[in-house]
Image 1 (cartoon, one colour):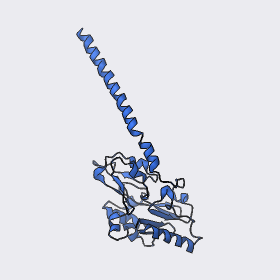
Image 2: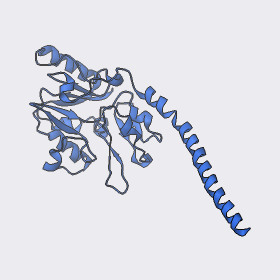
Image 3: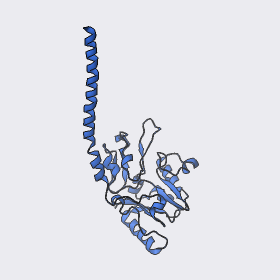
Image 4: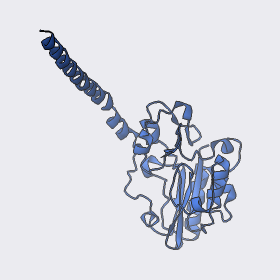
Length: 247
């Protein structure tokens, strides 16, 4: 079984119950000011976005082959067998490579904390292991957000499209994007009209990430040699100056 979420934007009424339930589950502040901020942040791990008369949700997409995991040099992010991508703050060194690597620009950082952590949705991993729906799905009054087995949710999405073909744009976002994600989205309009990226490859991205990161050790080595050379030259000049003063 692979855990997933299906978000149907045609059913979303913008009540933001999902936001409040997420904040309660994570024990982070939530008020009218935060609700009005339609962006992900360290204190808002999912957000409703308004696009004219339509709404969409943003949260971690939990990619089948996540680039954030491949980019993390210390294993602070890991892909679990059931699907969610989880974060282990004790391992994090604050490099923020995950933020640069994510094609959906999801991970956020606690810039104002003395011991900052990366923040992101974990698909309510503990709740799903206990057989419960995600907090956001449980709080949704219209079934715009439902959670469960990914294959079953794909079947449900196709059923909704087939039952009301004029109501839906005939695609499931997340089915193939970057190799597939555990968050699936339905819409009445092309996804770019909801602010979702439509230029993503259908191939997983970690291979590209690794090709870039594999150059880092070489760059670090060259930088170390250059810095060592600068240090030697600077100190050599000081030694020469001292010798000239003595003579």
